[in-house]
Image (cartoon, rainbow, N blue to C red; front, top):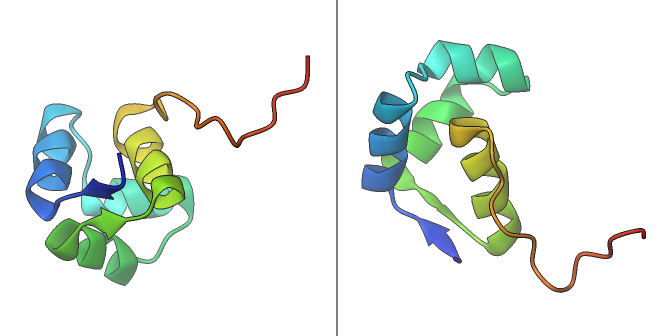
Length: 70
């Protein structure tokens, strides 16, 4: 997944009971950044993984290029 739309982000925030202030405080982000992402969405595999983890607690499947120590 390369993008998360603003609509999807708002939906996930409601579903997982996340607030703008709560996300900013827990993840050390600015309120401005959280509002921007909520309004515009995010693009890029790494950003999508980060925001999925922020919103759901689960980053989803790891891409193949991520090295995993065995």
